[in-house]
Image (cartoon, rainbow, N blue to C red; front, side, top):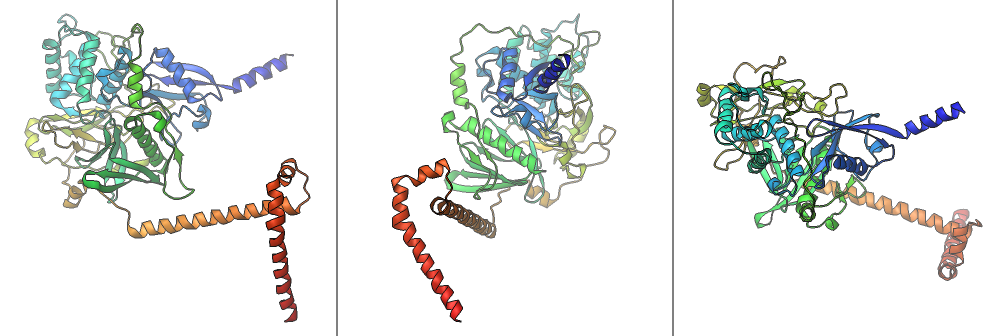
Length: 571
């Protein structure tokens, strides 16, 4: 009896597994789910825990053993998607950034998007001028600690908060000045709303960078935003395609293609190379989902997309979910009392150091930190990109590119900022807030006059201190490669692929005809008494075909075979 009970409990445990999801405020939600549970079930549990209704903007990210990141597919079983063994660790993140975050219906949704953007600001994905950075940081400060109080906030109190990896003293003073004088009386809700409105206007709002290389081998960062497809390369934003201009996305192995129609029916093909086939497939799936979410009017317009033009080759993927327009229409129908929000501003956290002798304040995860030396160009504060959508193993220090700013000499007199950074990786199974080392350093600055973004990258020393020595100038070829990279497939390539495609189609057609012939012979010549064969033989159509077509054809073949046999015997 006891052994049966024990075996039953073991089988029950085998049918269940533990799953931990790291939320945007760094708290953890742990649950036990059935082995055959789908991703939608886990996502609904989290949204119920957060009391979140506008949930279509969010997703669950996980990392496989090869350090490649993925979005959990809600229509598939969780255990079949995860390549590792339970317990599983994942992260709740904003998957589709709202085109207008300040217009979200509920405050709880705006608060979660605020937490995501605060994380983006820290990790360098949300980049801006020094003036904008000071305002954004002051909004965060006001939302977390309220009005300035001389008794609670000593001199230099803003330096105790890590809005960015590390601030210059001038920026810290400016943050404190704005907080003291311009934001008095603002509630956390108002400060967060102002933060969202400011962040939305930045060019890098919603950027989730995917490191790649162009056809010349130069590093580039590809991203999908609420407004279109973006390519960042060298020290510029070299390309931007609106979603209505993008006609097709496809990949083959490590190669990623973007087809687009621009003004005056100008057709272009952009070609880039991902570090691994897995990274390229992840890039392609992200692009397909973002295009469907932001471009389509209705979810009924979503179609299954193939990754290749070739017959019977490539991956097939279909976005499952509502599109942006439907989400906004559904949000407008929400009528309930606003749910209570438990802000993490004064809750102890391992994310960010607090004011001396005060409570620890929440920010982004803080485990291992690195330093990168970035000069200030025309008053722009540059932060690095964590490149968090690419496997860490696929990028080496030798692949980093290090352009030097044209105004570096002029900036030398103003001093330089040392910004430390860390790259968040939810796959680490040892640290409570896992970290992945990454060597690509990206800094993008947006100019006041609306010119393209400026990107600077520098290598870091193994000790985590700024790298000594001057950065070398990019050559003329590198600067030229920083411009628009429009690569059309050569005519020979297209012909070869067309021939291969036709041959593949021909072979498949011959194979199908052979199978049909075998089935026909079985139906007409064999004595197999199988139910479905008997039913087919008894139909009038088959009997007519058998006596009027098949029997004469069989006699003709038999006659020809006897004639050929006779010729061979006579010889």
